[in-house]
Image 1 (tube, one colour):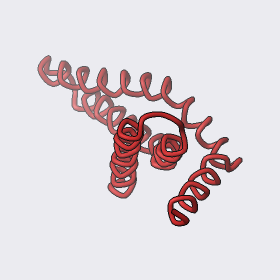
Image 2: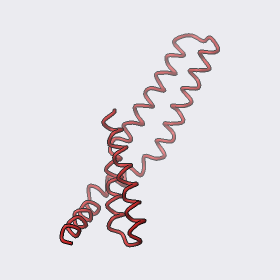
Image 3: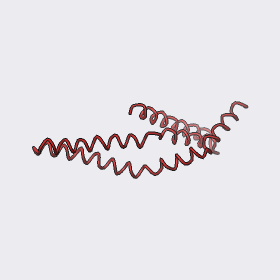
Image 4: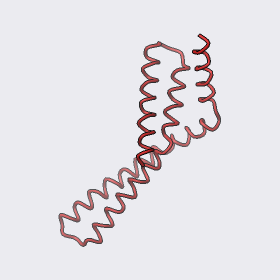
Length: 124
């Protein structure tokens, strides 16, 4: 029982940390930018394809491919610390009230997302 209460205390400290709270607020603002960057990335991919099929100059095709590559890297940088956000959400879920099964499954979902984002960061 003492081990469980210490885990809850650590989770609450993590969730209530001012740094974590400000970081989570910042990452919440990147969603709109990511959508815009994704649109530019995919539009550049389409443009490069259309330019290749249309027989345009290699300069124009290279420019479209470069824009696509830059947007891909920018989106990866925006996701850089998202695993902290996912861990924070998992800790909030564990400390919340409600059904034990739902709470556990939701926390496991958040932890899986944290692992995904962490491996995505390492794969940069």
